[in-house]
Figure 1 (cartoon, rainbow, N blue to C red):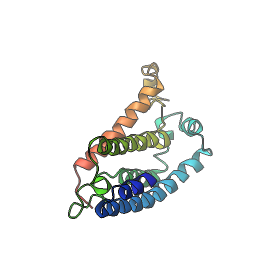
Figure 2 (spheres, rainbow, N blue to C red; figure 1 turned 180 degrees about the vertical axis):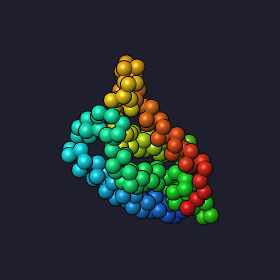
Figure 3 (spheres, rainbow, N blue to C red; figure 1 turned 60 degrees about the vertical axis):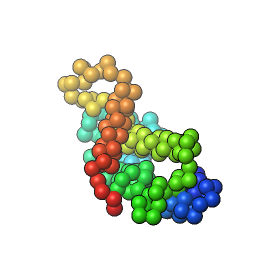
Figure 4 (cartoon, rainbow, N blue to C red; figure 1 turned 60 degrees about the horizontal axis):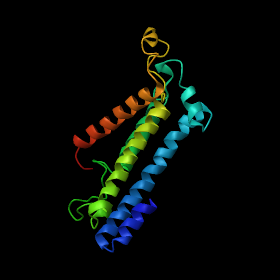
Length: 180
C-alpha cells in the first residue's frame, strides 16, 4: 500500500495521486475481507503454520477447506481478485478521468515494474488460495483408487497446477467482465 501511495505522490501529478489514493482505499478495504476470510482457515486447522494447514487437509479431496468454508472461500477469492486491480475491480483506473491510475506518469522500466508487481500479486493470491483452501501440494486423488497411478507426481507439480488453474480463472473473469 505504501508503494502505491508513494508512486502516486512521487510522480508529482494530481491525477496520479488521485489514482494512488483510490488504489490505497481499495487495498485497505479488501485486505480486511481477505484477513477475516482466512481466520476461518486458521481456526479449522488450529495453526498459523502453512505445513500444518496443508496436512490438516490431507486424506481425501473432501477434507479440503473449500468445502466446509465455501462462503469464506468466495469472500477470499473475490477480495483477492479485487486486490490485484483486475477488471471489474480496477477502480483506480477510472477511464473517464484517469488513463492508467497511479502509474499514469510512468513509462519504460518503471511502468514495467508496476505491471510486474501486479502480476506477482496475482500469482501470490493464486498460491495462497491453493494452499489455504485446496490442499496445497497434496494430490486431489488421495484416498481414492487413482492414488496409486498418481503417487509418482511430486507435490510441487500439484501446487503449480492448482495455482495455474486459479491464475487462468482470474484472467478469465477479467476478460469476461465489465467495470463495476
